[in-house]
Length: 144
Image (cartoon, rainbow, N blue to C red; front, side, top):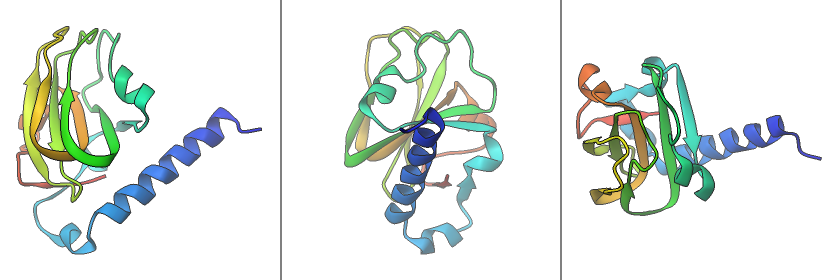
């Protein structure tokens, strides 16, 4: 029988394998690489339909250096919304090569979708203004 801890271990292993297969090693040596693990104390992973659908809903706050990384197996335009999400958030849409393509601020409790203009394999949600606060912008490569 699989324990909840075992399932968590498998999810992180899956995340590690997927992220390392998608990113060419030569991109990691560029000076524009941002190491998320050094900036975020905790990164929640949303890598299945249920977790992606729930996202950061129903929370009254989000600690300053916590984020949620959304992972998809396919590569297409993405849409995020803030239904039942009380916390003001910013979202970055990220390519399969881990390049930040677009960053948007989102409105709490809004049912209006914020969609990427480009194909994305990942999205990172953090507190509103977090990207600006850490001088993170489009074109930079994220290492997670």
